[in-house]
Image 1 (cartoon, rainbow, N blue to C red):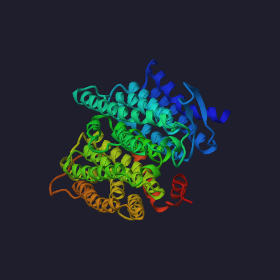
Image 2 (image 1 turned 180 degrees about the horizontal axis):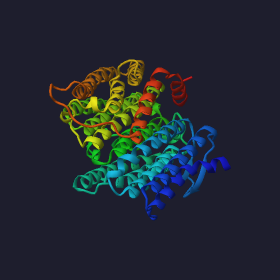
Image 3 (image 1 turned 90 degrees about the vertical axis):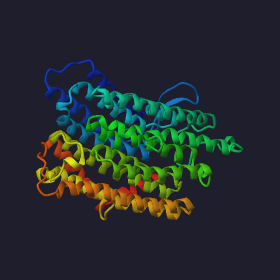
Image 4 (image 1 turned 180 degrees about the vertical axis):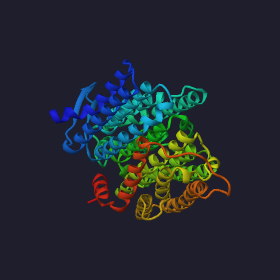
Length: 487
């Protein structure tokens, strides 16, 4: 029982301490950084301790009714997502210490930054759909101040766009939550689904349509077309925020909710072969191409990577919608690879902006010679994003294509062609940036230099991690196959 209670500590501790930072005032920046680092590191360690030592016993915090209860449980999917979040949040914290020096209002920033950490872990450790939905809503509320941090015209507009999209998506997801409760699906998440077969019988088409609406609702956070406009707009936020939004917190929480919905609530047997599955697969393929094309057309570095995120998130969604264990495994593999790659790219873009105030590709001619660490890490991440073997992205894209072929779904074969075309577009928008930085026109030379270790160390660690998980993928694949139920 005590072990179960401890599950909520990594959730409540950052929420309470983050709220406390809003009330206290620190005279020195070093004191603030000391407390923030301590809170984040302690919480990450607590989360990892729960993940690797705690069993799958649920903990009921409190119950509203027999069917509505706040339940926390660390299963294999929770462990996977919680581990990724905990590690990347620590690295982002140290990067933010340097980056936020010139952004102002650091204490307010780190207060909401810490609270968002707890909220994402609450979503990861949610034991049923009710708990997941509540933290899904809280995540929007805790990240709005981060998106609007600058409080200028662009930031306020981005915040307004962000909240409109998030609330619309949450409304659609709420419809699904109601039906899940009505049809007996608010039990503990179980691979294969939790809906009562007796209640489902005769209502299959209705429930499949509800699944469609709910999937689209969660798809707003995952930037599924046409609900993706908020993501490039949110790039006005400080780089530590955009890195978390686009690689870890918001978008991956949307993906996480989609996996819970498809494989752990409705179940793939209900969805497979339906027109709803086909419709969503087509939407995912459209999003893959839309994001890639827009990235190629966009000269702004951060927004280019934002559109790239839109595309790559739908790689994962495509894998989820195959509704097979292999599809789920490939989706999870690309989820972790994309998280490592994309946070590296955003950190590199932020370092360029921080040291040179340059935001556009046409401004960085020859800058790679002045910032070798930043652009070296960007190159490693770019090759991974393209899918050049043996970099990380190659293996996840190969797994997605293989799962698509094995699924036997005719649309999945079209999806393989879309993945190949997107890889070509990815090569164009990544390599064109690197060519500009490494091989500028004669006489063109931008000025700048690498930032200090607080920003360079996370970049180097993440770049090394992308290479490591590509060269030694077996432990990660074993863990992912366990989650997907592949023996």
